[in-house]
Amino acid sequence: MREIVLDTETTGLDPAAGHRVVEIGCVELVNQLPTGRVYHAYINPERGMPSEAFAVHGLSEEFLRTHPRFAEVAEAFEAFIGEDRLIIHNADFDMRFLNWELQALGRPALPRDRAIDTVGMARRRFPGSPASLDALCRRFGIDNSARDKHGALLDAELLAEVYLELIGGREPGLALAAVAAQSSRGPVSQREPRAPRPHAASPEELAAHAAFLAKLTKPIWLAEEAEKKEQLVAAVP
Image (cartoon, rainbow, N blue to C red; front, side, top):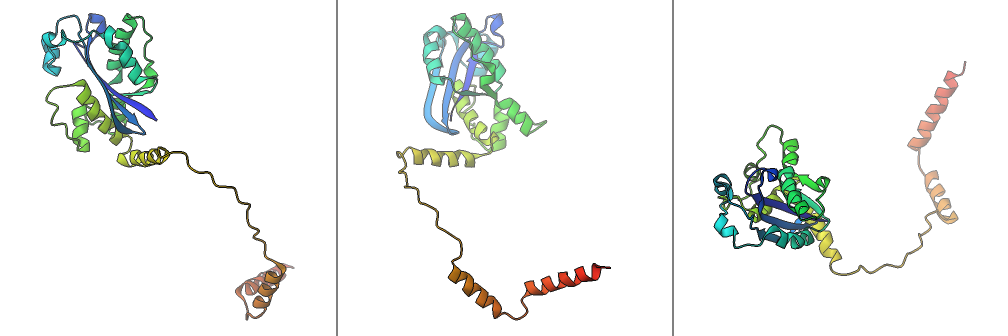
C-alpha cells in the first residue's frame, strides 16, 4: 500500500486572489512506513511575497526567483504522487492550491476524495483539543524542534509520523513491514498438498475402548442417565 504525505507553502490564503504555490514536499509511505523517497521543489510564483506569508515560511521573492515555475515541475510532481492516496494536514487548503495550479496548465485536477485530512482525523480522535501540526507533535512526543518556520518537506516528514500515530501507533506499520520484507525475499516455495489422514476409530480401537469402560465403577455419565430416567418416570401420571 503506497501513500504520499504532502504539504505545500504558498504566498497567501486564496489562489483566486492571485496567490500561488511556492514549495511542495512529499514523503512516500509503503505499508505505512517511510521508504526514504521524497519529492521536494521550491517554485517561482512569478509574483511578490507578502510579508505575512514570508513570516510563516521565510521564502523570499529573491530566493524563489531562482527556482523553476510550477509549469516546469508539474510533470515530475504528478509522476511522484502517481495515483496513490494523499495524506494532507488541512487537505482542502493544499488541494485547492494544487488544483488551481494544475488546471491553469490544462492538467486534470486531483480528486478531493483522494486525500485524507489528518486535521479531521485528529479532531475525531481528540474532540475539543488543538489539531495543529505542532500540537499533535507535542501530544505524540514527536521532535519538532527544527520547525522554527513552516517548510513543506519538513512538515511532510513530521506529518508522516503524526499520521502513523493517528492510525494506531507503530505496531501495525511494523507488522506490515515484516510482511513486506518477507515478500521481498522472493517467491515462497509451494508445498505439495497432502491428503487428510483418516481419524475414525478402527474396530480394534472401539473394542478396546468398550473393554476399558466396562472396568469403571459407577461412571458419572451412567449416573446422570439413571437420574434422568427416574425424573421421567416420576413425571408420568
